[in-house]
Length: 337
Image (cartoon, rainbow, N blue to C red; front, side, top):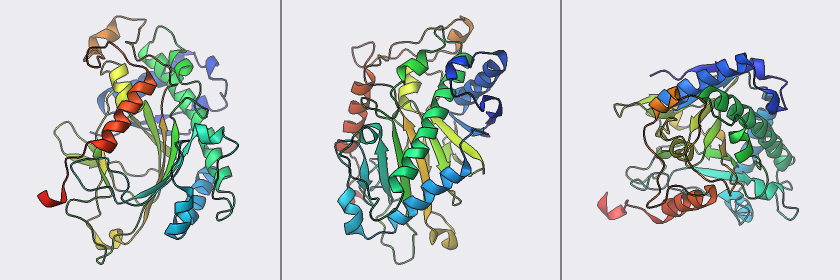
């Protein structure tokens, strides 16, 4: 199960994504759709995001994570859905101990807030570098949504764009997360079963992943085994989240993935970095069944999106439901290990 690579070079220069409608863009969209329907992941090359801006975001992130814990703690996660989460705060797989990682979140509500406090005193240019990459992610996300709508033959070609119009603003959960996985030395005391990132699927529409040099990300095959999604220079790795999986009636695949601890001792001693943009629809978006131009695509339908006794939820309700479940339902217990 190889992860396909789709070239976005023909989309360079198209900031006004409403003009992306010609046959070539439909062909690109069809390639994206095929990859996401079968694998759930796709590499995008020639995205138009300057490598220097990606590197800047990685460098200021490393400088932040190198700070002492009590300094990082001054910028803890807040009501703007932004800020610092310390090591072992999150648990993506409730059957395992918390993930051995730390992260800094940048949400649209913080970007639009004039009162939000950033660690720019400790790390010069921190907020500027991350906000700049967030802006690039917004542009790429809208291009991606537009060609996907063409490839899926949506009846309203601008539907995905319209329902994700507030990326980087209020009332939208889209978040840029910079992640740091500390080195794992022999002296490091990990709980039984604890890994860098437990097996899970993402919550939102999709995610844009920028991997550092140290790999480790694995995705699940249909038979339950895993393959590595290696970093490929000059690409962005995209994967579908549960929301778009449900919204599309299962046509788009939300694939389980993880980051295990390296088996090689030399690799264990290396820190790992990545930056992910988790893309969500605007709060008021109704997750009703999508409408298509062609009846052909309906043959790919796997299920209807139903939430309990309701035919649809709003995007905000769905996200809150998933977040609350993730942070309150835990089957792991130290005593059981």
